[in-house]
Image 1: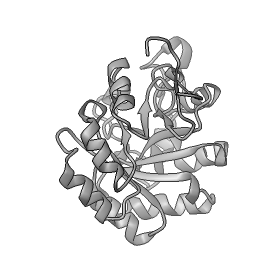
Image 2: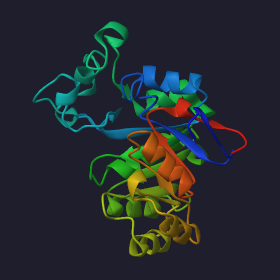
Image 3: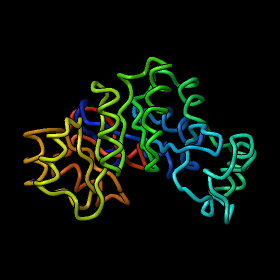
Length: 247
């Protein structure tokens, strides 16, 4: 596995984490376009509300990391958010002026060219319905997987749209037999452990009930672990490290 890209089975999900976020500012149009050029057919993104209840694509609740100390997405309107430079923190030469996106804008641009792994970032009880409505408006139900660390939000998604696929994102120490059973009993589509916490035994146990998609891939070692333990897919900042073909 020393040569990149690594070939994986066709059914393995190569999910560009916040787009091709190792090469372009995360969750921006630049990152999603680059992921597509790299051949990715699945992307992961983070959604939360602006102050005026627009579905904005941004990971952090506060905007400090992007160069705006003391600002938060939930405190700003969409009109205010779209004036922010979301690219210079990554590279002022290459990406100055890159703007934040709304979920509907992303769908308008890419339509059904992607499978969208949409993470509900905040525990707002209104977020599931808003995301489901947006997905439904674009007819992308079959192209969407709703994910969250918030178990109760996923239960709400299931109640609102029983056919919608959902995935439970696990935190450190949560990939256990108990939680595998809990996810399956809740009717979830997949369980999503941290790559470093995947083991052959746990993944094999999970496969009796549901697929496993790893996250928090911080480098080659994490990627290798997810592959070697038999995961069905993973989110990765470097989607060009993997390619579909004969394993």
